Length: 224
Image (cartoon, rainbow, N blue to C red; front, side):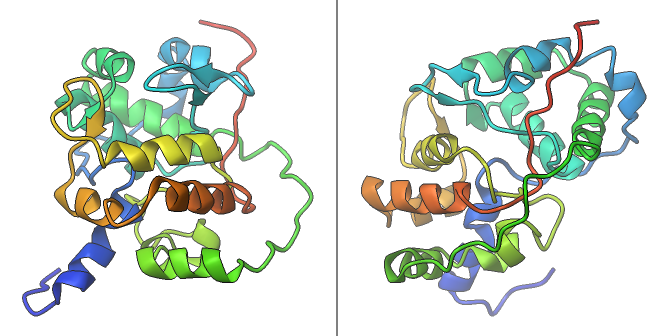
């Protein structure tokens, strides 16, 4: 997409929450969800337990990844593999994965949870004036679409219903500089997030986490 005449704010808009969990990665292999059943043991110990909490870089629930798009999940895993996302545990896991592994696991989690009944559908409450101002400041809907659950591109994450404490930690990670263990390397996202105070990020994360969405935690019946 050619954007030679876009103003700086438009460029920031394109990268805002769309870059929240990683950059898009072109995948040259086709993922096989069935093959991933032999590979998910390393994932389900955290992502397959309802309410499971991580303790690094601070205590928060691990993100729900069932129902997320395969293209986004592949991008996120590749970012951990390359060190663009700094997280010792995730990097340690990602560096063991081949491109085929990443594609298989991403396809598995995209399909996972589709047979799990959704919670009773409720229309999301209209955002307060303060929340609407924050959404407008970030122009979140421009990338993540209706209800922050229909991204305009599959490489952008679904955000609606994600754990609020995880969203808060993820957003803050873009404000971290020169830390070998914590942070996410994305110049556009870092520039944008620095315009928000921690209190504003917490309010925004709480609102997004309360929206109805497709993301789920799906416990697996057993390790393989």
